[in-house]
Length: 130
Image (tube, rainbow, N blue to C red; front, top):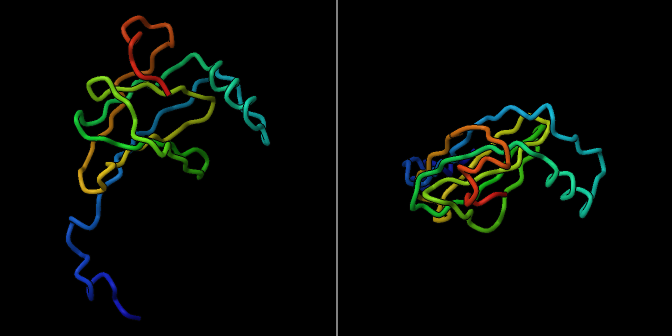
């Protein structure tokens, strides 16, 4: 085999951007999504979830965010809107891993769970929610 990584000197950290991740337990009160559910029913179920993961990423770095559930990963293909690095995500019934990666694919963002809050928590009334 030809070792491309070494042949092309791709062993430096500049070629290996990071994906920051955080695991969040699912919400026992959230409605489950039946297998095969399609839009717009899928979005109706998601909007019914009342628990929100408040996430914090490195302020000032444009990031894409996504999630992994049951071995399937999806991400939003537009940069996430934040409020001082924070944004909220609906929490469903399943445990989930949220992740962010830098739009420029070189910066090294961080990601942490601030707390799980109820959607009506006034502390987060202006927080961008996904």
